[in-house]
Image (cartoon, rainbow, N blue to C red):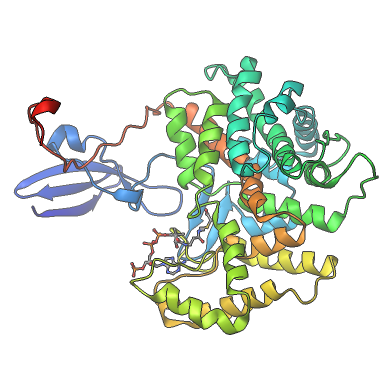
Length: 440
Ligand code: CMC
């Protein structure tokens, strides 16, 4: 089968032709505001009887979106058009949440109102704390998060009607407000300490750190440097276009599932080591390497075609340049270590040396494998006192707003349909059932 695509441009419409053998089909081509054009092949099957085949969706745009733009070749990440470094440098996380949800930066009164509304939803139903008792103490906190976020739909029935814009808005605010509370509860539960209620006169990140680290027996003294670092980590992880967990949220939501269930689905997907689980895996890798002398041995393994070993925290499906989030994360990492007086962290030594070697190694250069955000976030979070099992949980806290913004955009999109991919079937063709007594 011979297939080719031509692009014709006229002043009004663009189209492309797919040619298979001696048959041609024309399909519209659309421009984004920036980034690659797309060919709308939604009628391809109806007209030609052909499906496209794109495992991993490497060439497939699954939706139209106005939220986040990534230029992976240039290492650019924009939320609603604003560069990530400007937001991380000058903004705060709740401002970023507002931007992602509503499309514009808030005015001072909008910001005040938004902060107030989110803050009012930070407590979770008291029954949730009993729900937690059902988990084993040694459960992975991501298992607890996936279960408890899903359980929110059992507690907040009045915000599960997705056809009601008011309920959608309340569910969105509830999740931005309550997921950090659940995350802190997951942590406290794992170490056997009492849950700490949210404190609404604190900002989002300070409140979160307090819920994680305060104990009823002592006063908690917030550390503004660590709170700012936490806030920045949340901003950097807030959204990332149509990544695996976001696509999961959209797919789950496309069936009309309630928002809490959809975010729980995204949380489950995020847990995987190729996605949000990579920060935990990256720190474990640095620990395993242990000393700069052992780096060549691990680089060798990562390059060996017969070894499935990969350097965690390196490479990205979209970034074929330095991950712009990794640069900010590296700076934040140094600020946190300086604040905590950690001068000689052997893991940091290994990380810096590994980064240096990998950035100059022919294999990594040729495959454009640069450090990603997870490379430095693990060291930072560890210094802040989080155990590795909590790393992906913190990612989930931050990404909740991205998932919600994308879910909301999808629900409000008049073109939205249930997601239903097709397949290239290579299994058995029709055959007759054989009774078990006659099977050999
Ligand atoms: N170490 C060694 N080799 C690698 C690595 C790595 N970390 N990543 C990719 N490669 C090689 C891979 O073996 C393949 O080689 P070849 O062409 O010879 O078969 C080539 O680079 C392309 O890899 P791929 O798996 O086809 O690329 P992908 O776009 O499907 O995978 C990735 C992207 C992030 C899953 C992958 O780079 C990886 O597994 N990295 C380690 C895990 C990690 O750090 N993940 C965090 C991603 S950032 C956080 C987030 O946004 O969720």
